[in-house]
Image (cartoon, rainbow, N blue to C red; front, side, top):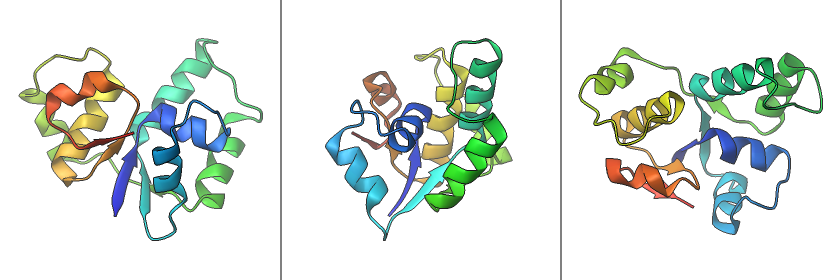
Length: 128
C-alpha cells in the first residue's frame, strides 16, 4: 500500500512520539508499504525551524536526509496535477501545507496518515 504521511505523522514516527497512533505506527513500520513524504512537509518543517516554532535534535539537512534514508521513505514530488486541484479545493482547512497534502492524496488516490480529523471534509482516505 502507498501512503502519504502528514508532517506531524512523519515527525512523531521518527522522534518516537507517543502521540503517534498504534495504527499509524503499524502502517509506517509495515515493510510492504511505500511510505511517501511530500516536499510540503519538509518545507513546513524548515519554515517552523526558521520561525523558532520547532527544533530538531540535529541540523535540519542532516536530520531530514538521514531519517528519510534510514526509514526508506520516498519523496512524492509536487506535480502540476496536485496543485491544479488547489484551484477548486474548498477552503475548509486554511493550512496551506495540509491543503497540498490533501491534493496529493486525492490526485494519487492514496491514503493520508494524519491525526487531523479536520481533513475528513475533503473526502480523503485518512488513516489514524
